[in-house]
Length: 319
Ligand code: DON
Image 1 (cartoon, rainbow, N blue to C red):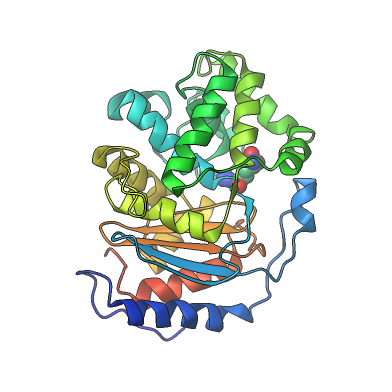
Image 2 (image 1 turned 180 degrees about the vertical axis):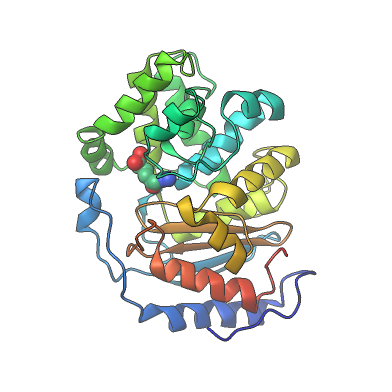
């Protein structure tokens, strides 16, 4: 889009300039209407495709929000990044590495074949198999306690109490046979040691938590800020956990286009099928976007464009 990055280091520009660039990102990308809304979870197909919000939260706690920044949607796969962080906090670097893995599978997020090809090792915490294996590790004596810990953990990242979208949860719970099959398969390889259907239920709830683009930006800024939520000042996870999580997002956060994303935009990021994207600039802040029209890889079309623009205009590309 003709915007060149000039500097890759230093702090974000001043308040006025960031505010202006967030407005410019929204303005430039609003007209793009390519892509399709996800429909494999029936209720997601009913969303207004015109919705579009762009938010930047910096690691000092300033938030710049334009458009549909406070419209709530189900977090979907973006939850995988933050549940992974909570599990890393509980188990530590080495154990999570061994039990879940950190590599891109190169296959679709709901692939069964990926599990088989890796002898039952989930390999990638950002696809459904690895995310199910991760959710199974959430602290809690019962599935209800695990779910409560997921909800409170993600709420601390967002700096406000997040709520379950019951309609999305039920819609997905009625149609997620594939996730149940993946969980059973992982059980057969000894990778899930509790009731696999209970794990799928907690995972399905975690995906149905309601967030806004503003929440995503603050959640991402918490990872950028070494684990301290820059708005509430609360420490959510350790700095080491943020490094581990961001490394995984860099290699696998954007489905099969993770390599292209890193090549073009140069930031660890995670997307979800409901149209959210969070991109993190370590030490600086994060970009949260929401627009439900997706490209064939499953990433929001407007969200990618707005993030690409802001990465360049704000000088965020890590490389
Ligand atoms: O499990 C599913 O298929 C959805 N709850 C989440 C899908 C999603 O956003 C894709 N992720 N990598």
